[in-house]
Length: 101
Image (cartoon, rainbow, N blue to C red; front, side, top):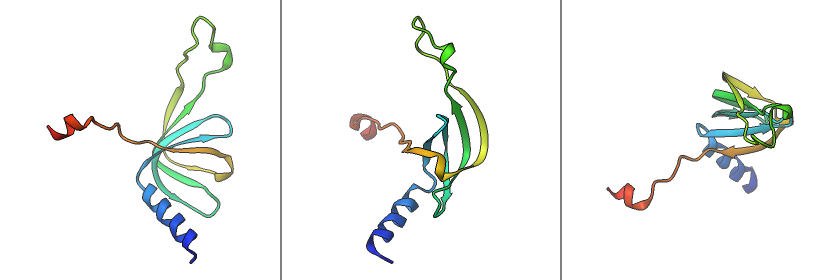
């Protein structure tokens, strides 16, 4: 294997079990624990939730903030061809003073 391939494999292995936030082409967001991926960039998430943006008609100038609807999916396969963004959810960092207490 080439060095770049080994580096890529190591990076993907480091994501296993981490919470990912994946945005798809239809603006849905999936949040769940990464279980695996394949050469076609499909990703399997466990304990996954799906979030949908509210319709534009429900957002107004007076109330520009609208809640996203969500539902629990459990285990889900997200086809790689529809993924436009992948983010790793990091736990909030505690200030140094708190972590030493």
